Each structure stands twice: as C-alpha cells, then as structure tokens.
Amino acid sequence: MSVDSCVAMDQPSSAPSFRLKGGLFPLTLIELANGDLQRLRTDLTLKVAEAPSFFQQAPAVLSLELFEDDAQALDLQAIQQLCLEFGLIIVALRGADEALQATAKELNLAILANSRTKPVVALEPSAEKEPSAQEEPSAAKEPSTQEQSSAAQGSSDDSEESVTDDLFSPVGAPALETGQPATDSTGAARSAPVPTKVITTPVRSGQQIYAAGGDLIVLAPVSAGAELLADGNIHVYGPLRGRALAGVNGNTEARVFCQSLEAELISIAGYFRVNEDLRDKHWKKSVQASLTDETLNIEPLR
Image (cartoon, rainbow, N blue to C red; front, side):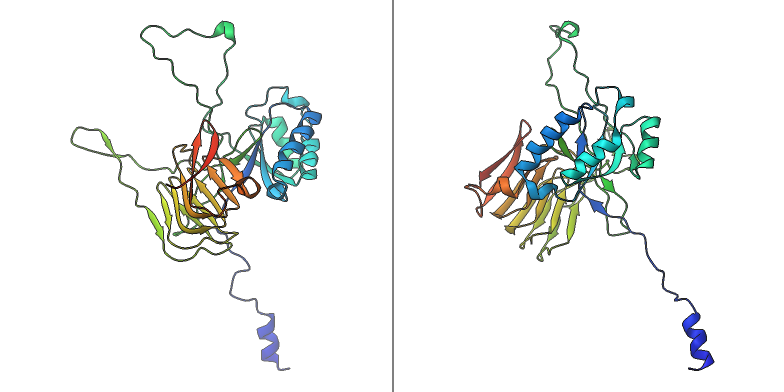
C-alpha cells in the first residue's frame, strides 16, 4: 500500500456523522391524579386490556398538573417501573416542582414545560356561585392537556402537538407563534385563510403528513403505519389503514371522513379509538368520525 493511500485513509470524511432534524411524534400523556400505586396498577390493567397492542413500547409523558396528593411523597421511580410493566415508557415529566425535577433528571427523564392552559379547579358545592339574572350560566370546559414532542423540521416540516381521554391523553402541540394579525378598515383582526393541504399520491408506511391550521385531503390510499395529522378535518378518498388525528390543536369540531375504515387509530382533539375498537359494523365502510361530549362517534356517510 502506498504512503499516499495510507494518508487518505487516515483523513476524516468531510461528511458529518449525523444531522439534527425536527420530528413530530404523538405521545401518550398520563395525567396522574394521586400517588396510589395499587390504584394505578388496577387502572393500567383495565386500560391496557382495551387495546393491548397500542400501549406496547409506547413513549409517554407523565403529567403532575392535576396531582392532588403531596408530590414530595411521590415515588417517581416506582411509577416509572410500573408503567414499564405495561409497555409504557416514561420519557418526560411535566408539571413537577424543582425537587421532583431533580429526581426526574436522575432517572434520565426529560423535563417539559407546563401546559399553557391552567387546569380548572372545581368549586366546593358551598362555594359555588349562583348565576345572577344578568349572567348566562356557561358550560364548564375541561382544560386542554395538549403538548407534543415537536420541533421545527426545516423548511418543509411543521411543529405541532396532540391529546386523549381519562387516564391517557395524546400530547398535543402549542399554537404556532405569529406576528401581529392583519386588520381591516375598522381595525378588527383579519386572519389570512389557511389553504387546505391536498395529497394526490398514496401515503406509505412510515410517512407523516401534517396540515397546520387547516384541513387535510388525501385522494389516495393511506397505508398501515402512515400517519395523518391536521388542525382541522381529515378527508381520505380511499382506504384509511394508518392513523388519522384531526383537531390536533384541540379543535373538538374537527371530523375524520374516509371511504373505507381500516384505521389503526382515529383521534379528534386527542380523544381516540384504536383498531380493536373500530372493528365493528362500520369496518371497511364509508364513515365519518366526530366528537360529542368527549365521546368519539363513528357513523356511516349518507
């Protein structure tokens, strides 16, 4: 071997060993209400039994924003191990004080900022205020628990968050920061229309498509392992075999439409149903999914 060739082999490659790129990945949010490990085990057993495959090796964020007990007595490591027994991998902690954050760092957990919406605290019956004659009683709205593991993805990727029901919530995305809104001649805010994103080619396994601020229309099949996300509605004019998450910014009015329901997961504003729950009389039929009183409904398209 010549001396020149030896020198060339010793020189490092000009190509970088890695590159940093943003990613958008739905996470499960576990909103812990108390530190009762036995109750947690019982609830996890029931929840995982509903959809065993959905929770296997599933990354999750542990939220203490609704925690009612003394957080100082919380055994964070025991909870992490208990969740791991059921296939849930705790990757981050949210809503913890400095002491628990220090414990989380020792367990190699990421620390997430609190959600932007503060939880609603229910009033005691004796402290509740009766609405006056001039006041219209308003329906209580459960706070959004959205936040997502999202990062900016270069020029072609968007950032986003997600949500779910009772014990678990897919983590959602913060609203995109914008400048001052445009105004009309009266000074009222005038928002620019958000174009609908239209996809004309099949969505393959492993692909993820996000329509930020609007609807997503797919004019082709969506394969298993593919993922569709939209702040508005999702329309699939073909078989939907992957995951469809509409209203990921918390829009409970969003809907999912498809010509053939074969999905792995359907979600609206974080309330979801998985494959095992979807295999009913509507399976492989044209349907629409909507949210009513925190219940995800599947109905035939008329």
